[in-house]
Length: 200
Image 1 (cartoon, rainbow, N blue to C red):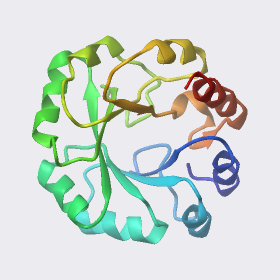
Image 2 (image 1 turned 90 degrees about the horizontal axis):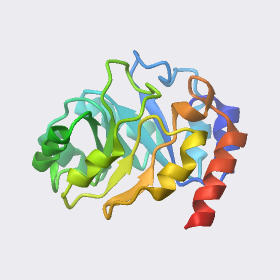
Image 3 (image 1 turned 30 degrees about the horizontal axis):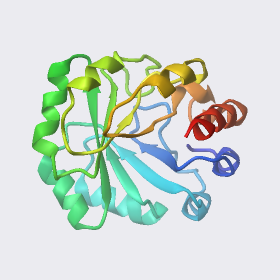
Image 4 (image 1 turned 90 degrees about the vertical axis):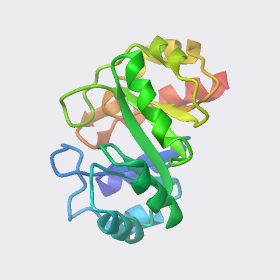
């Protein structure tokens, strides 16, 4: 999220969390012109997304925007995750997945992160729009709950509902619901979320 009007519109939907990306190469990077007060006043759980950022810089940004969580999409170590949690942050650590072997990397982060996020391995900086083979996640036997990400779009709601894993706690809806980078299609989002919530 980035645009004030779109943030306010999405906030009205039956969603749980809202993400804000702070990584300049990303087309969804939050600009300096983003209305800080609109973000701070947002009533949804707010997540600041970073890639190999400096610890103090992440904490400063989290404080400025009143983030509830930080999401780490780089090669951040378990020590960085621990340090953020020690400072009061809920930490989501992202892992790129292309094979079952990629899931083994989570072992070192057990107890360091509050949640994992499994995304599609790609050379693109976020929002590739591609989906990995979700059946690979049946090889995940960790104790940390996870979010499913990567290529989730309006047309795959039935597949998402059929997918089951005891540690899956949510789905990340991003580029598949955009009309432009960082601008969400509120109609498509509302329809998708309604189907998910009704199924619950």
